[in-house]
Image (cartoon, rainbow, N blue to C red; front, top):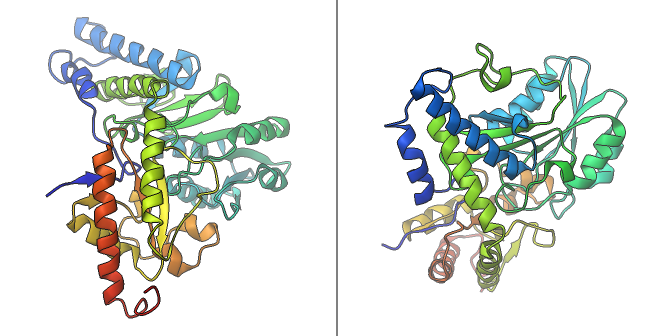
Length: 385
């Protein structure tokens, strides 16, 4: 059976170049980067080179890059490492659960959070962020690109608002990294989280940009690793893999890959929208090139995910972190969709290696699956004929 993977926002496969870059650091150069002998020095040098690559990726100084286990740790570190009892936190209601759950936990420590709702297009209005500010606002956190809709947020404008208010600004760039250029100086942020496995790197490793002078308390303590900002023996193969994936991602921003990807996404989207009772969530807002979120009226999204999987197509009903959840997407609900339409929405997110043949196959099987499910749905019977 043909298999087409269109769930890149959940995770991506390692590119061969990434695997090859990592291989020696599992076998020949396995040393601990904190050891002073030759094996340790080889590992330490690899981490230093990777840090320089990530500094280029973020457009920051090498010393401002902190390696960690991924996006969730980066997001948690920004919140737990900066907020104190009595502080006020501003974020959006469409953030990843790593932000939302951390904000809920901080409530027990006397930190109040204001959750700013998006527009119907899935955009966070900078003016709404500004209205949410208080004298005690210490931190603002807004994602670069939404993981479910792909909508790009106006982080530069929000960064200016944070600066004027004297607040710290964190960006969850997990879904935007590698799809749009990162520039922490242009964004005006103090912290920025990324994760390797979203950019064809390994799982379990990521990086956090921490601007010099930001008084961030470490989430993990116990050693002097990462300039005492994140204790724990460095995951050298993972760090090397992240750096190689970041290097390749920077090339793809310049070589036309994303233009090609956007054209494939648009053709996929247009083909699916030929079906009656369909539409795009966030389609009238700026989006990353690989993502579309489409609703199918008179269907259960979970049933369509399963039907497509049986035909060899992998898609998602929303965030992979909420797979199996019975509640509809909090992102789509915040955008104003009712529960029925939110549950009837699917995310198609293309790999950078996606082809015209992949799109052709998906456009063949989606109408078949939709027609079958609607034919057996008592709700749809006679509605969309």
